[in-house]
Length: 116
Length: 113
Image (cartoon, rainbow over all chains, first blue to last red; front, side):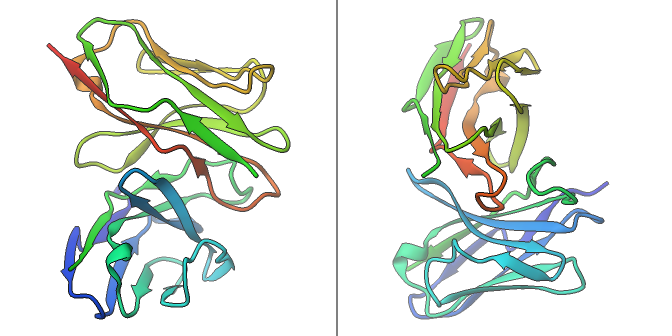
C-alpha cells in the first residue's frame, strides 16, 4: 500500500509568514510523529500523536509551532511568523502503536522549508 | 539524558570495501537500538534493529550487534556497493522516556566505483 506522504515537498516562504505542512500517514497507523532535520543537527523530535490526541508536545521549539490531527489520519504542522532558524526538513512518521516504540516508524520524504 | 553519538562523515569508500560506522549511546536503562538509512531524495527507512544486549540485527548485508558492555551498536558491511551511498542514522528508544526515537546526527556514506 501507499507509504507516508507529505506535502508540499518544498516550501519557500518569507520571514514572518505562516506555513502549513501536511502529513498523510499509512492507513491504520494510529501513531504519528513529527521530526525536524536541520543541517548538521540530526533529527529532532517535535510532537507525537496517538489517534487525535498529542500526549507528547515536548519537542515543539516555541509557541509559534502547533500541530493537529483529525480523524485519526491526516496531520498538519503549522508554523506561525516563520523565522530563518525554522528552515529545515520536516519529517513525518507513522507506526502501529499498541505498544509505543515497539513498532517500526515509517517515514515520509519530508518537506523542505526555506525561510528567506 | 539519553543520546546517540555517531562518527562524523562523510565516509568515502571504494566499491567492495569493508564498512564500519561507529555508534555509541548513553541511556538510563536498556534501550532498543536501530539503524535507519536515508537514500538521496527518499524518506528514512529502517535498516535493522536490536532490542536486547548481544542481539545482532541484519539486513541487506549490513549487521550491527548490541554491545551493552561498550554501549555500542556499530554498523558493518563486508562489501559495499555504489547503491549503498546514503546517510545512515543510529537511533535508540527507551520505554518510559518519551514517545520518540532519539537519533544521532547521521553519517553520510559515498561509495565510488
